[in-house]
Each structure stands twice: as structure tokens, then as C-alpha cells.
Amino acid sequence: MWVAWCAMITVGLAIGSSEAIAASGDPPELKQIQTMAVWRMSHPDVGSAEDACEIKDAGAYEAVRLDFEADEEMKDAAATAKVKALDQKVVALLQQKRWVAIKTSKGGSGIPNLRRCYRKSGAIAQIYQTTGRCTMNTPCTAYDGFTVVFYLPKNG
Image 1: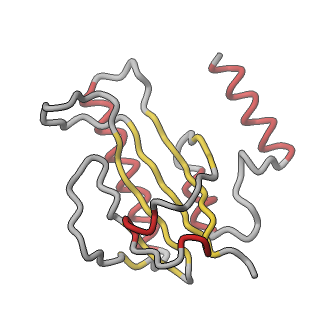
Image 2: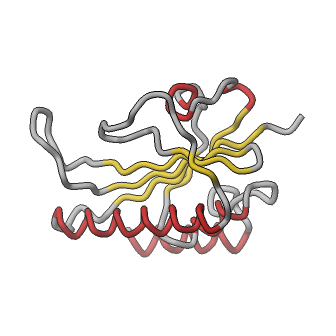
């Protein structure tokens, strides 16, 4: 299955599939982040960003979401290390390209922490670590996923 999936991504890249690469009007950082890992790309509804990144008019944005998931076979410590390293690479890129952290009015401490947002030229990038390895009522320190959501202003 892995080989078939890789072949599908390779074919998508070769023919310029919008599922495999960023659109030409997207921030260059989106394309650069896509080269850092194997991502699942989607275009979710923007509705929930209003609260997390303090977007005033969610209808004025479209979203591009990238989800990374560590291999299920990885031990918790290895998966967490991989997620944290990817998180650091993405944050370093955003800061290097002069994306500015958004100061949110509410503190963020939950899992996932949806209040890590950056802004540049009208676009917003939201980043957060996720986990499928923990249960309710148990302190969690293992992460196996990482998400980057770009909120892009709609044209016109």
C-alpha cells in the first residue's frame, strides 16, 4: 500500500495535481512546508478559525490544511520527537520569512493548542501538534501528529 500511495503522490506531482502541490497564488511558505514531510492535504471549512486565530470574517478566507501523522509503529518517544522536530522546522521557516505571531486574547493550553497562529500579508498560518495516543483523564505527553492550516484571503 505504501508503494501505491507514493506512486500516487509522484503521479500527482508530475501532472501538477492541486492535491499534491500548492496553487500558484498560495504563499511560497506553503510549498516549502510541503517538502518537509509527507502530508495529507485538505481544504476544510474555515468556520472554527474565528475563535482560534481571531479571524474576524471567516467567510473571507479559504483554508489549506496539511496533516502529518507519525507511523503507528513508532514508539511514543520517537513519534513525539519527530513531531516536535517538524514543528520546530515549520516555526523556523515562518519566522525566517517574517511571519508574525498573533497575540490571542485567550491563552492556549489544550491538546491541541489551536492558538499558535502567524500572520503575513493577509494570510494566516495556524500550527498545532495532535495526538491519537492518549486517553481521557490521563496526562498526555506523546504526540503523533502535526497540522498546519493556511487561511488565505479569497480573491475578489
